Image (tube, rainbow, N blue to C red; front, side, top):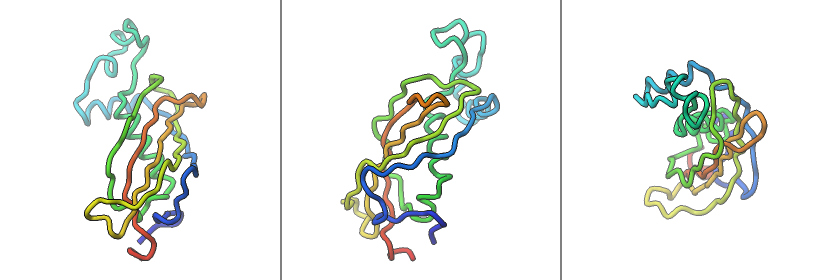
Length: 157
């Protein structure tokens, strides 16, 4: 069953975009992710080390920023109950460091829709969405594609 605002494969159009709500990244977010992943790199966990490094202050790891981007897009409900699978993440690049106190949002743009040749996708099509993660100054901090299998209308209703 899909949620209000969810889209099926047929509902997506190449080039359409959605802008998510924003989220301020906190000290607690940084520490919790380090704890969850075991990534205690000093650029994330030691203010004196980071201050004396090329970064000048602690930074969030790329996977953490990417994870929050996925969550922000998820909050829009466009895939709630209609996503069958995540097929992959392609060419994610990071352009600007993200620090505690920065606020991010995502401009998610449909890059391509296509019939899928995946063996278990007879009831779904592929939707590739470009995630452009931006900070409070609207600078791109990360960008990359997420490939998804999205159910076709009527197949799960």
